Image 1 (spheres, rainbow, N blue to C red):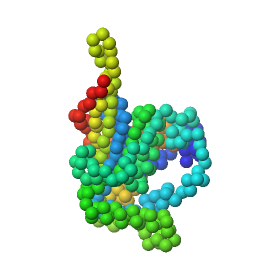
Image 2: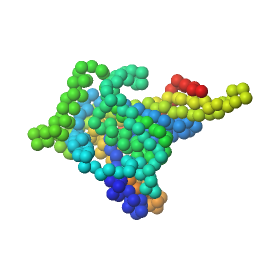
Image 3: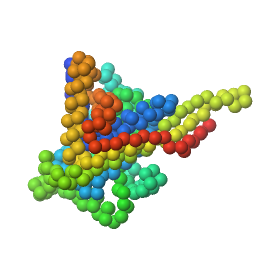
Image 4: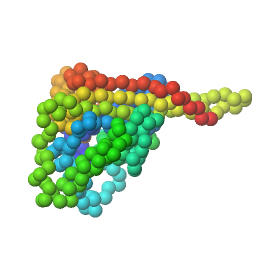
Length: 308
């Protein structure tokens, strides 16, 4: 999409925002707000690990299954080779110097130290979230060597929770590997949980970040750089189902805000293939907190480390 439409949309002033549902918007905005928090204190945000904790009854919606099936079923060998990742393309067409590395753990990992409970593991939608953040970093410049990961968090590290994840994985891979056999018996695009399940669903998104500040410190007659590293934690809570109900709400609220900002600025809004954070910034965060059943909290954790 970036290769096909970014230049045209910039030239015409059209603002196109992919990554515009769940869980991309919560992830993208959380990292953006953590970056702003760090900058206000004179620090640089260097790394964020995201843990996504869904409600106990969360399952695949038809749209998510279709997206995951499409992404995993693509013929990677047929993709045209390029000089650099299009997600790093800047307004002038060059490669951004702000690069993002995916640091999602490759296997199940205890999160007692980070979250206080549970375990995390990689999941099929994690790379999508990291790609969204990668695009935001390329355009807004969090750090030239930024690191980001996105994992699925299970509150109870039990056999029951593991079995449920295994069941959901089987459903996904059955659709990908045997679409003709299983495609008709799994949720289709537009299908989702019933109203009761949607009202009782939730997402708690935990962001654990590292921010650093380098200052010159005197030692006798010489000076040396002193690197101070701090931890910043954020929590974005959605109190309804996000796989279906709040994905629709996020899409609508983002569209409404885009129209309102365009009208209030006389149409002077940056064009191009953007992300929720690069297009709408903290205005979108505040709108979500105002219009949806959500909460957001960010704080610095006192575990300061000084490295000479």
